Length: 607
Image 1 (spheres, helix red, strand yellow):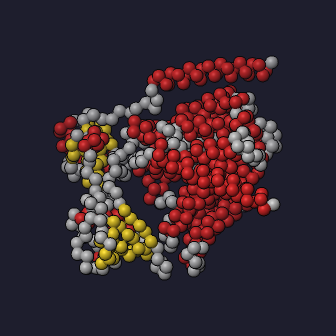
Image 2 (cartoon, one colour):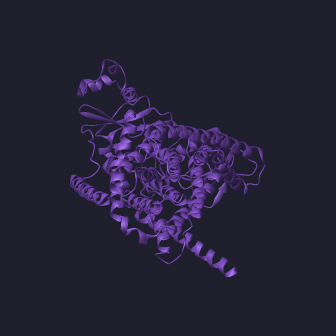
Image 3 (cartoon, one colour):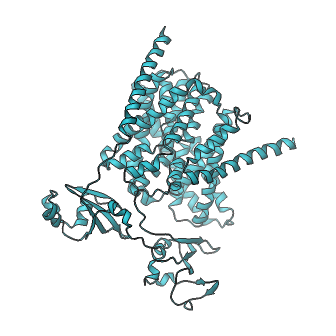
């Protein structure tokens, strides 16, 4: 018995360590990390090293708990400001977009597979949501500095679309399991009512749970080492409570993280570090378990059709759904194209594909294998092309600030205060003469190994390590003083335009010089006000405004969101096609061939 325990622990830890070390490969070569996690699970499974794992219930249980931990961390790290900036487009994608993707994909699946209509829509629901972990790892590993609106939209969509896909999948599994074949009107009514009840209960429990978590952390004098465990346990309690009363536990745990993370409760820095580690562990375990559960020897029979469905999802279903959802928000074509492409499928799709097996559906294993291959196709095709596509579409913007070296320490007995340590870097405002505020007077400065108190250190010099004890709401302001400023690089001149324009100059000057066709009202505005008017009152760094023969670009903004620098280009950027014409022609040829094959298969089935 003891030997079995030791052997199981040895194998489990070896797999987790292998997955952790694979992150070095992913960061080095920009490979999709989650693809490596899945690959390790497959290699260790029945058709690899021979580890036998075929318990669908355990796989679903482990995956559900891991997903709850990931969603809580995702909500905890989402700020309200990000939600305000891109909330409506992202939530539209997370709800309507998921449903549209499932329907479009389901219709195609019906003609390319042997599944019934209900099973086809079930497969569509399992692969309809995107994977936040896959998207943001690729953005970090590729050092891709996206426009803030695009990044925020992807972040919120990925964090909120899982509950919708889970609801659709579970509902369709129940209908198929009981042998239901309802009329379209009845099915639509049941789905809508069930959606509002499930999501409403989940959101209510989640918001209440997040408030309770924040208050308990403030009221209870727990040991600092217990606080992260306490919060994590409460988040799982919220997840379980919402599910027990018929709500969406996944939406509840995300909402709980969102409310708790924006409540300003103490020990947030420690909680974020702990939850980030737990989220990584949850992702590794979930992908390893799902990889072990798969049986690659069963893939060849459905491989071609599954690959085609995966390409259809990437190239048609997702882009069409995104375009329809974002049409009312008038986002630039390049941003819509990129959001359409960055819809990587991941662990949630594989996890949901287990539910047909749990329900004992006739084609449960085929649905699981098809979804698994679709996820692999998504990670391979989209995972290695996110960075090149962002550059092709002109969505990567130069960094506004240089490096910052900063450490935050929370001290016992200092609620809502923290000790912040900065290393003074060359070119930072404090070296250019900017004075530190009275409330940010350094407590200690370490210079060349010697510690000095205020005011013995005199003027700060590059390389100093500065320690400041401040309220936890102020470090963001100090960052600007200790961050080196980055001037526009000569290589970025094309991105920011030929020359700079004062945003306080009258817009009438543009009309007199270039005749872009401004209205009478716009002629009375400044260039900065013209930008705000055309963008609905909110602009961000690197936004571009085409006016006839010229294009204006936001070069810089202050901390209050006011435009302080504008570039002017004489060559307005043109939207780039998603794929080259040659590749597009080959895809059309492939789909035509497969449609013919599918028609022949249906004819044989009828005979």
